[in-house]
Image (cartoon, rainbow, N blue to C red; front, side, top):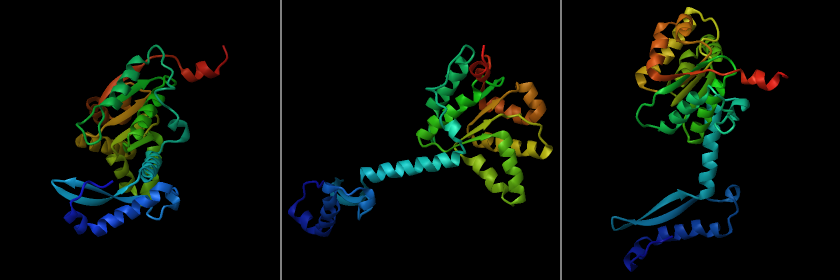
Length: 261
């Protein structure tokens, strides 16, 4: 708790030592964070470069609560619903035709580092029910567990948000949130016919992240040619450079699971 002090140091830091001992005294019979008069703050001392230094720090309970509160804020900001919060690599049912996608998603999560070098995203393409959204949600959940600021959004919902934001004069705020998060997950690209205005908004979003070297994870039922016809060559060209494209070729898991043989 205290480094060895000389008599002179003990006299010089008498007030600091008293504060340190007082802050640690209640820890012997911890009342819990809610009952702590110091709110989980206590004084520590260490010798650095030959000098004794005192500083305030958080106790383990305060650190754990802070981590839990930050994680909850990340979850809220991520836009993930309860259904998708439960999607993990552990409960993904791997089938023939999903191996490359599973490997690509694992590698993205392993390679991504906050503030690290640019990491190429993943574009999952395939028919409905092949597990694209599950894998993208698994990536998002794994990253959230590491404290990464992720947004997970269905593209039709994003476009609806943007339309509402125009009416509320808040378009730039909504766009900024999507542009600047550390990892952006876009589900169901090309799922609906879009107007020129909506296409331009998607382009602005993708192009911003392209120029800022911020990763995008995305899914689509359409191949590159069909997606270009739907969204335009500019968007698909940038996604081709930003992402590893993986086709998932397997049967519809939902139908196989829910429809009797």
